[in-house]
Length: 326
Image (spheres, rainbow, N blue to C red):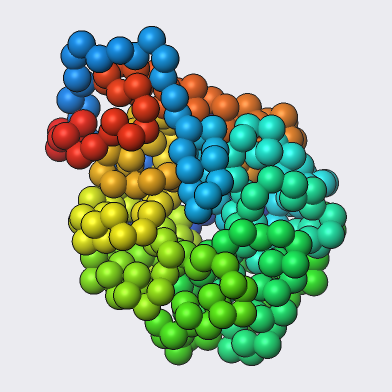
């Protein structure tokens, strides 16, 4: 358990903390996530000018100060009364990007989304509901859609009662479409006129299929171990997925990324950026917007230190030769 997680545990109601932290089953997938990044070792380069180190990246035309984004997580109002409004303020202050969950605890109108942001969507049995959500997000300024494809059924878990919940959050039990197919990628692209990324990719074959079907990016993710236990850790499949995509679209990754060293491993394995979920929730719970900003700033600073020590002045200097299996 990290210090921030421990601090959040001390102030959150037990039911809320467990809702955020727990995976399912024996928690094997959740518990393996962080350790899997530690299986890699760095191979530093010498005689490189690292007097100036930049962690800046560009994604879909947006310049970001950091490759660490705030991933989609539900019901931030359980962690803070202002919920996603505070999260958005913190993300903006850090120069990062928020992927807003379709099951947010605050309505879109109450969230100050002034920087570029993405909207996470599920395809529901009733596609009219999904279409309304996506169109509303685009009208509010979403610059990309992230389709979560690895949850054909919602794993049942109690949702603590706290905070003001948006209609989307109150209807979180709406049935997702278990017959989801690759055609949903093009459909979401048509109704949004935005890039569509597919989240939940764990195999090279699925990654290529998604890109062939029109995906503008893929996110290597196992849903934080919250849908199926004993799913492979993302750190163990990111490399093959990125190799199969071969630069056609950005590849992102999430799952157990706890510090700048983990971020550097992910970038070396082929990720363009990473998403963090639970750490943002812990930071929100303990410090509101300032906590979220500080959390993302710490990732950025830690990554910059790791890059400097490894002889990597820019994100573009990172490649697969930077890491080797431990």
